[in-house]
Length: 243
Image (cartoon, rainbow, N blue to C red):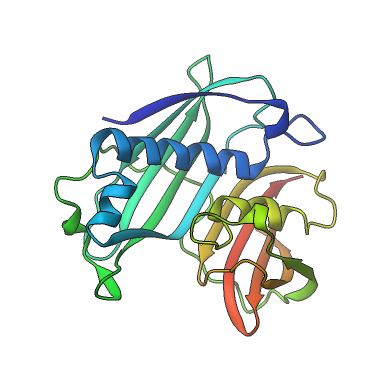
């Protein structure tokens, strides 16, 4: 059984077209997950007391249709069957008509802070309420094709407003950050986005942003990104647009 919460799409959640920003959708999904953890236990703080912490590895979201300002949505989240060193979670955003407007999946690593290494997800105990994995068009696991040439498109410093309690760039902010480096952010409809989080970006560091694109056999414009902190890969990502 999934955990659910209600959200109202506020003006400040949307862009110049009155469409919810990608990071707003990321944020709603992860807020629901945090609330499920707090409601069902162990919460984030309880895990920390046990010397454990979740690290986000991958997140993928399908945008079924544009989400507009002032919409009222139900956000659902649920644990997926997990084992070994990967904890997986699913998400759905449902409108007032009962239609799914976005769906997502994430992969987390459980980190043992005291031992300084990954822990098996079995350390969570009984875990959280579960559900079935959503069927997504965007892949949660991917490799940037060798045929795509990535070129520098700019730099982005990590400011105070970007970071979370760990003083790292908050993972929900990357979708907006990358979107800002599109040649024309208003061109086409975003239908899918997937991010592989490789290395944290700390307060004060500067990201170098590389990008390239291709057209899929289905006629979808696919934009690829790689960000670097020095020589270290920070994130790799893809965004799909319907013309």
